[in-house]
Length: 106
Image (cartoon, rainbow, N blue to C red; front, side, top):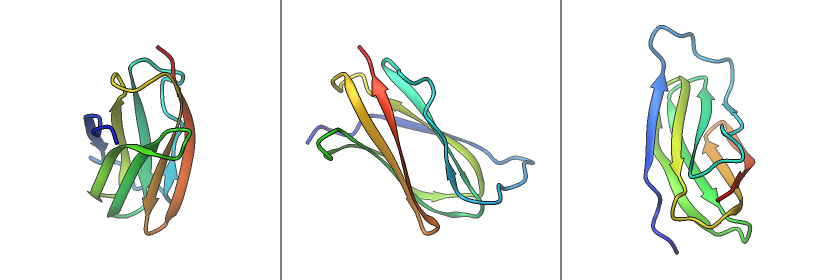
């Protein structure tokens, strides 16, 4: 299994009201090369697991596996060591699971 790609996270919680529910946004840009941003929103502080999978269902990266405060958060995925193609990213929290598709073009 490939080593996880470097992920950097930033939060936008200062002075903003927490969203009404948990949500996962489409990555931007999409298609992308070599990195993309994945944003998600939380209605309350919770543990977040954000993972990236290839078309075979193999996990290629874990971008987050920690507590996040309520608010909107953005995580960057550097896919420079990955092959071109379709990938899926999945977020798991106590409030549910959601997934989206993205495309890496080199």
